[in-house]
Length: 167
Image (tube, rainbow, N blue to C red):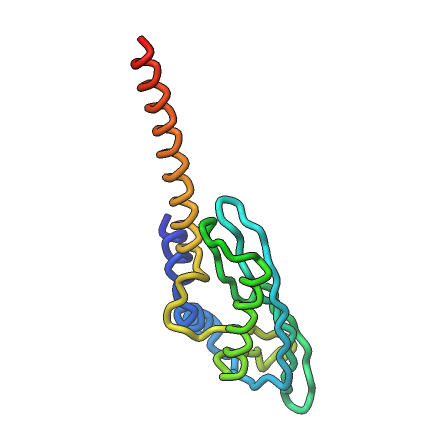
């Protein structure tokens, strides 16, 4: 239970994820990206409309050697079922925000100096990122459950009321 709470809290804050990673990988060093290429995609969800996510291909140099890496699902943005925009529009919107982060250099790449082919990209350094968190996904999933439950209760009560009126 403690682990679930910790993971959920870390998912709310990319900044805390970075701090946790730095703490557990103290010898890793930041490097600048030579090239960073995002590819935004869509994943239909269960109990939700879906989510946009971005895979990143990037290059960096260390000691004169260029390394090419990929970070799959580097950032997510969840959308609840009540969002009426089409998935293509949502991916385009998300892609634009990712491009802004890259232009502003609001990302961090850490490498292991002993094994420079090992790296970790953090696409967001925001203190708080609610719509991309597991917590947001859980809250919208819970909303679906509650609305479904209330709908069933409403249907049963309506049916029962109609039955009583017929007698």
